Amino acid sequence: MSLRKTLQGTGVALITPFTPDNRVDFSALGNVIDAMIEGGVEYLITLGTTGETPTLDKQEKLDIVNYTFEKVASRVPVIVGIGGNNTAELVNDLHKFPLDKAIAVLSASPNYNKPSQEGIIEHYKVLAKESPKPIILYNVPGRTGRNMTAATTLKLAHEVPNIAGMKEAGGDMGQCMQILRDRPEDFLLVSGDDLLALPQIACGMDGVISVAANAFPKEFSEMVRQCLKNDFAAAKKINDPLLEAYDLMFAENNPAGVKAFMYEQGLIQNTVRLPVVPLSEGLHAKVKAYLKK
Image (cartoon, one colour):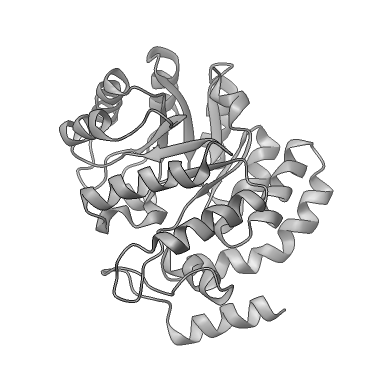
């Protein structure tokens, strides 16, 4: 099975809704999942960093994965996020997490340790060997503190059989184009940056794993579909009004920004876990004003 064929389009890095007393709100999560699928997104990602995974305990993570599979009920593919900076612990998670219904595992490169490129390569080789599902690399240097170079990505793509794709959120268009030029034919490459999704698909990317689609699943996924049909004029008409939303979402913190939008849409409570805090009053007012427009 080629992930590049299966995961064309928009994947949503699902938020984790919380109750006002900071428990996982499974009822709201179910509503969010339904809204994403009804909005036309092609697949879902559970336990991404947008899901506030650094503040979820192990049991909460297991409960969220199991609930997500139950609620999705095979309507769309589901990717499970298993990433971090302790390689041995991740191997343990790969064996213990319920991955039988997952299409792939999304794994962010190690944060804080700031390994060398060789360290990143060895880390992913271990994960790929132990994972029962294909690994999708995730380069997000703004969070990890270390960029995965094009050379690193391409070495893993060509030499490690169970590495099947990449979410690229480095923001470097030159690096993206180099990976696109030299990747294996069936290697999935998706944008991890909502703002750059349109031009990156124009360069050849296969879609996007989106934060903004949590709040705008219908509009965002249709924009991506128009890009994939090479109708960039139609895509731009949809994307242009969303540019302000992208700015508001990421001005202070993710997922506080997108959660403010979803709260105003009536989908979730406006609750995040420390050290993340809700949007400042002034910025939240701008979110409300944008949605009224």
